[in-house]
Image (tube, rainbow, N blue to C red; front, side, top):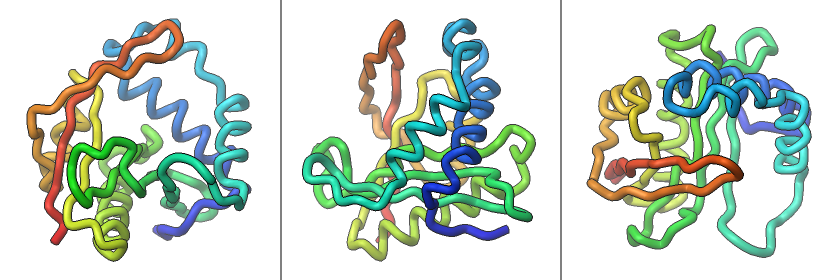
Length: 173
């Protein structure tokens, strides 16, 4: 398995993982019509824009890495500067997903280890992430990797959707 920085050429592979993992992991947690309407084509367009080399002038910066086997993207993670300034000197794991076909194969472990190492190298002594309330598979995964729920919650508003999330933190240094 190769863990490497994502490029615009990875947009389709990342989108496939993004859509398929949401459809598998969030079944029963999100309205089924929302999951059914997810589009690989639309996600790929968004990912291509995000991965084009440019420097954002506003907001936090992030990086995306992929886990690849035989040229196929099996997982991805985005991480970097925090979107909230609630924890001093923290980095944030913005998102991490594996294709459902690769659940339990070590893809997630390899990605989270790479993210933790990169955030630590960037000087972040602590990191945080948000997990959808009720996503026990993810909560168990994060717990196994030392990410502890700290009691913080938030509601993310999206069109026709409210996501209730719980924060997890991990000391990196």
